[in-house]
Length: 201
Image (cartoon, rainbow, N blue to C red; front, top):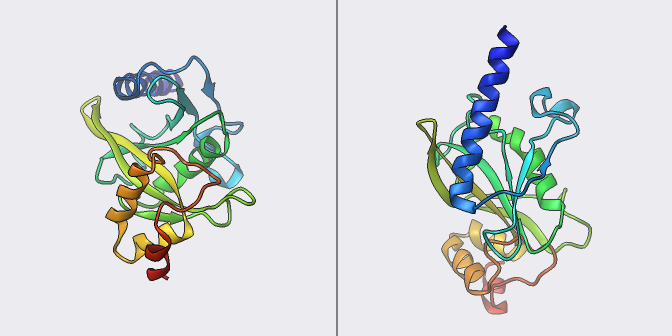
């Protein structure tokens, strides 16, 4: 009976969070990216979050974790209880795999909009991005709980350096003007002009 209750509660949260996210991103695709090892098994043995896909929100593929809203162990951020989101222009799987694994980190540390995370050790070979910059993409409620989507955008080393030197707003504006935001393009040039990049070194 206890297992049935847990299963029903899990399904209720799954359904509620998907409905809330679809109000922001449009109807999700039929497929779900199921982790080979379920999230609840923990990161030590490779547990990762399931992923849902959206192809109608922007001209590209949006992927979002769907394990965290409703999870009481997550350290809530400025959005409340949140899911991780990343966008690619095509079916690139690096981003979905990254946020699927990164989901467990949100149970250990608070990730907020405007913060960065170095990903130099796990970026694809020859990729020009070296960190993530987090954005407040959406806020909503799920079963009365404050919740939202934390967008992860890949940034280059000099963009990261600028963020760390108090120029995050400039980086964000430049990403948007260049048509990069909200996408993570793995192999691209910096959006900062050379003079600005050099000045921050």
